[in-house]
Length: 151
Image (cartoon, rainbow, N blue to C red):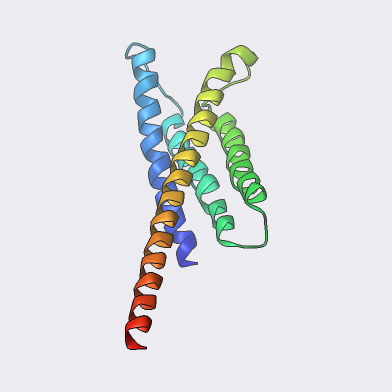
């Protein structure tokens, strides 16, 4: 439970930060005309929280040994992307009213961002694991030296 809370806090924080950045981009792209009515901003913030949870909580799957790494990625990213698409449509991040050409840029930008973030975290975790393994090897080598000296 503690791990799920940690993942949730990190995921929601990152989602809200990205929501702010994408909001700035939208404001600049619309030349300062970015009007929201009928609680749309509130809906979008809640949507960002839901998407943050949708990507972060399924990350718990990486802590199990029951699945291959590829299946873990599929569960984690598949769940997050489905939640993003449903939530994004529901809160108005993209609309099908303008046709597929109009809704694809925000969808691709958001999905691309999620894949980029996954790669960044995967590389960070891989580097951390390499450092831990190297330290373990160093400690094992030190133990061998001590055993040899004592004998």
